[in-house]
Image 1: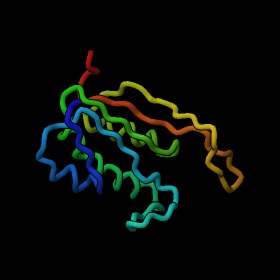
Image 2: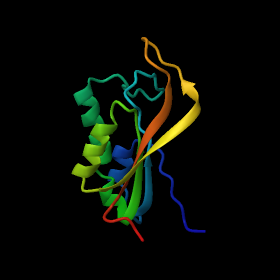
Image 3: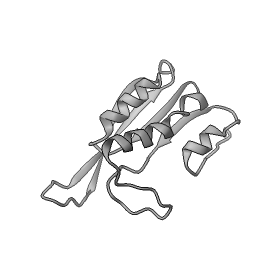
Image 4: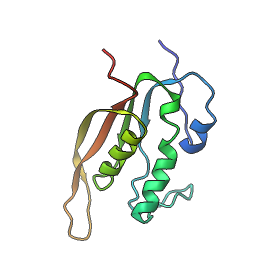
Length: 131
């Protein structure tokens, strides 16, 4: 089995200080700016432009720590997935696909909205997709 490294913490700091070998896979599941309460004090209710800046600060180091051909999977809310796509492309990553993660236990929705039954996940690579 290959060596595996799991970093847990604010990726803004964990990736900036990373001096180890590059990663073959990065999975990002950031707060979705949905107004949830987090124990670590993350403000999950920012104006849209501040959320984009907050998320961009955390994605900035990702390409540097990836191997050529490595994959990044980024999950977010449908409201922000377009911004996420633009950020990944601005970082020079290559779009491969968008996956719809459908689930059978819908997330309740308020304010007259429909319940959420799926979540978009972006799949990008550093450079072309490996053969």
